[in-house]
Amino acid sequence: MTQGSSHSFQAPTGTRDFYPADLARVRYIEQAWRTTSIRHGFDEIDGPTFEHLDLYTVKSGEGIVSELFSFQRAGGERTYALRPEFTPTLARMFAARAGALPRPTKWFCAPNFFRAERPQRGRLREFRQWNCDILGDDSPAADAELIACAVDALAALGLGPEHVKVRVSHRKAVEQMLATRGVRPEMFQAWFTLLDKVGKINNDQFIDQARGLGMDTQRAMNILQMLVTATRFEEPTTQVMLSEAMGGQGPDYFKKLWAELRAAGVADWCWLNLGIVRGLAYYTGMVFEIHEASGAERAIAGGGRYDQLIELFGGPPTPAVGFGMGDVVLSLVLQDKGLMPADQQIAARLGTLPDAFVVSNGTPEADAALSGVVGSLRRAGLHARRSYKATRNVGKLIQDAARSGARFCVIVESDAGASLKNLATGEQAPVPIADLARWIKLGELPHAG
RNA sequence: GUGGUUGUAGCUCAGUUGGUUAGAGCACGGGAUUGUGAUUCCCGGGGUCGCGGGUUCAAGUCCCGUCAGCCACCCCA
Image (cartoon, rainbow, N blue to C red; front, top):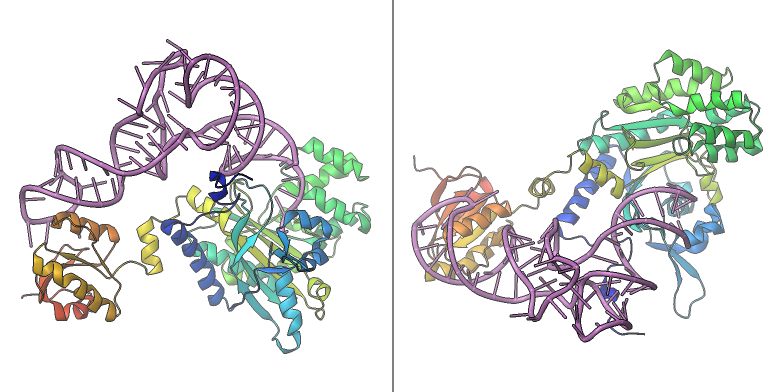
């Protein structure tokens, strides 16, 4: 092996280095996720960054192994895998204490995940993903509450119904729609796979593949018609479609779901679209995806109901509904829409802007006093920064202070006195060094008269 | 795993038909001058041109390989 070749020191494929401004943008998104979850009554949890590989093959089969990072400890026998998703950990944690947990249990997390796939736009090998789950409640109200939480986080980031669409569907509705058109239950999964491709393949390809699954052209076109367009729940055509699709049983579930979505104030964001089925085999009821409104970018979020999964992981039969929202696509959409705030606005929102930026007026006694001033402000609980520049150009130093986003600039004049300048208003007043912290905390300047 | 495309300072780029010590702006650091929020001027650090090989008297420039980025397919928890 050659030693020290430069590529050894590049970050691994599909990972990101977060410089201060980059990390602040992630924190901005995470803060919206976290505060929204908490407001909606979810408790934050987390699990290990890696799990036993078996935990993932139980749900997804051996085929998943090539999609994740797995490893063995040197000398060890068990195989581990970096977590590619949270649901198995969640199920394991819930199952372990199911008897003691309330119904519903509402949990969220927002950690990093790892998938061994080729990176492309909107998809990396390490990313953050927000997960919210409601366990132990099988009502349409729980489905709606979950969707509302996802929507509110997007709203907190400045997005609106004009920017994104929540497209809602239901596995059972799609199954009934297929059944009334002669599809046998054992073919449902094959059909879901095909339905998931609508939008990626053209109409002829769809009909070809539908015929391959034993559907005649006429019915295939009829199904396609139903799938391609997202419609408003209130539209008469939606009602007709629902009663047709659900074999006359009536769109009872959707009526309840939409009433709850309206009550939560998010119905404007939501569309009904039976074409949303999600690829995953384990969904059992409602499924939804959130996309940029024009269809640009990958899905911002996706989720649904998985009433059998907790049992699969050894827990008691427990209805559950959840979603995941990654930071990568969300960041792209915010940037596309011009909704990613400037660095300093983000810092303001995160509370990381300095309270004071301390500079010297260039005299020897001020230079000597500067460190002490900074120290006293910090001990007083203030976020104080200082100039490390050697220049005595006060204008340049104030420029640095302004660039730091600090509320005040302290210009040290001597070992006892300073000028306190409000950088937002430009006002300035002399203040004894002993009183600086008090005035800065007050957020004001002393006025002469 | 497959295909396309790109690769010169931290960033945006310039580098004639291959020709000597590889440039600019911004950013960063220092100094001078105005004592107060992009003043002006001067100076500086930083690149083995992604990496490796080949052709040539001579390669940032041509050829091959490789790595990485981006985009798409596959897949998408």
